[in-house]
Amino acid sequence: MIINIAEAKAHLSDLIQRACQGEEIIIAKNNQPLVELVVHQPKSQIKFGLLENDTATQDLLKIMDVDLADDFYNSDIFPETK
Image 1 (cartoon, rainbow, N blue to C red):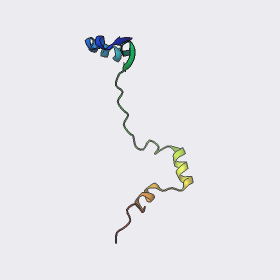
Image 2: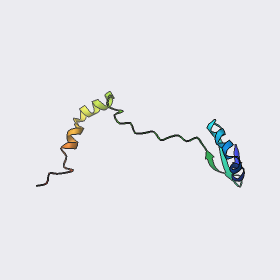
Image 3: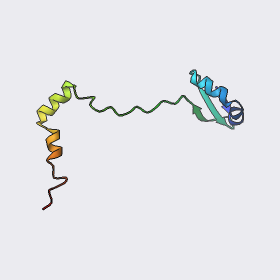
Image 4: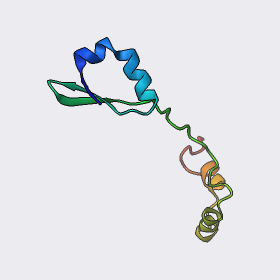
């Protein structure tokens, strides 16, 4: 459905409800599509450890002979001060 701004302002609650039910709502200015009213999708949160049990990742780390914890804690990023 394409609706002009003035009409959208007058019927915003109804348009929101219709968008929540899956209807495509496009708000136009001078009959030119301007924006689309869509249901908010929360950004997914970062989930750490997703590759923890991934065998391909573990195999790659073994091949590279990388111990990330050792590299982190024994790096020269923060050299000891004397």
